[in-house]
Amino acid sequence: MTDKFESEEYNEDYSNEDFEKLLEESLNVSDDYQPGDMVQGVIVFTGKEDSFLNIAGKSEAVISTLELQNDDGTLKYKKGDKVEAYVVSAKEGEIRVTFTIGKGEANPELLKIAFENEMPVEGTVTAEIKGGFSVNISGQRCFCPFSQIDIKSSDSREAYLNKTYAFKIIEFKENGRNIIVSRRAILEDMQAQAEDELKKTLKKGDIVSGEITSKHEFGIFVNIGGIEALVPKSESSWSRGRNDGDFKTGEKVEARIIDIDWNSKKITLSIKQLTPEPWTVHKLQENQTINGRVAAIIPQGAFVELEPGIDGFLHISKMSVTKKISRPQEMINVGDSINVKINSINDKDKKISLELITDEADPWLTAEDNIMNETHKGTVENINNSGVSIRLSNGMLGFIPKNELLNSSDMQKNYNAGSEITASVKDFDKNSRKLILSEKGAIKKEEEKELNAFISRNTEASGTSLGGLFKDKFSEIQKQVKK
Picture 1 (tube, rainbow, N blue to C red):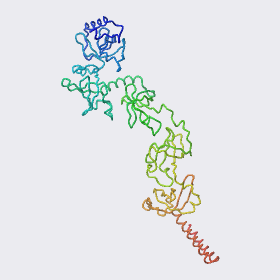
Picture 2 (picture 1 turned 120 degrees about the vertical axis):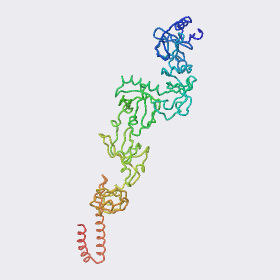
Picture 3 (picture 1 turned 90 degrees about the vertical axis):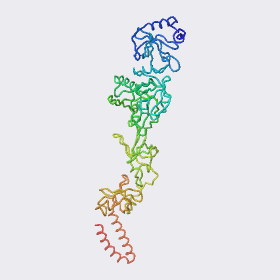
Picture 4 (picture 1 turned 135 degrees about the vertical axis):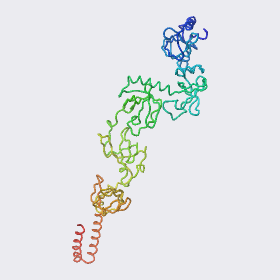
């Protein structure tokens, strides 16, 4: 037995005689320990295969040295370290303990002890089977339902395969031929312990660091001190067009706690609040032309990111100067790079109004005389209680007030969207792009044209005197028409 435990590699302070003395003392101790008991001890010796713990200051317990090692075989615990372990057997004076059942040899009897005493076991997920996973615990085949592999469901079940986890045995039947395990139970216990500790220290406004555990459409989860906190999508970046693909699972991040609800077990974090608020540093100006990226589209228009975290709103009515746009997607799509003009900036309300720059010829640059002196044909676009909006053939959008319509008694019936109408201009302001039209005025203007044409023809045909008579007569008619 001396050869089995002799190790200069692990502990040079103990001679063979010292080790044999420790072993003899451990066999002579008759403390009343039961399988499943948790004990605290101090490491007093490390051997090649087994090591010793001094428990309660009066007994020695044996633990597999494998449990004291890292994956590469180096020791992660040293002589004098305090540890906690579970008693797995106490026979003939020998007390054997383990951190987790499953690292070494495990038989059905040992797994039954783990089940009865709610001791953690270590197993490897080997395959996906109907309803769950097959888990190998030291050669014993166990079953873990899908619902018990994690606290949250995962989109990728393959991610659990060939991974080693701690489990709790929740069913033990047929002398170990039917064993059901749960990783979720272990995680929930750990989460509860972590939560108790964090309740003592965490508060709103604290800056915490953690590791990203998962990403979703609504945000990302971050593990902080053993519990998961949510960074909502809106809190990951100041940008409306934020790209959560910039975050990677396993990445370390810092965030500020913006809400804690222990009753609902919810902690909400913000990553963006650890960076400057863009509105405090932007240098945008009104009438500026700038290239932006379409971040989001709604029925009324689109949000365009002009600088990181600075969005402007492009109303659907500002997407074209020559035609009616029914859906923003007729002109732009999310992700498009577009040129816009900044019409206004409201720093107080953090709002920017935009206008889309297109290759269309701007009809509002037409000379005022050309607009005012002619009648114009247009297509009805909208009817409301105040009047009718029409799109002129040159692309300008004008409005005919109700009192300037010929048939205003039932506008919805008499003026259908898409129908053609003729109107003259009552008011034109190219700076504000305001165009007030009149259907009645168009009739009068046409009558005036016909009158002037008639006078001109008769003046040329009948001479000056006769023309003068006609002119006087029709001037009187003209005054009556204007009335």
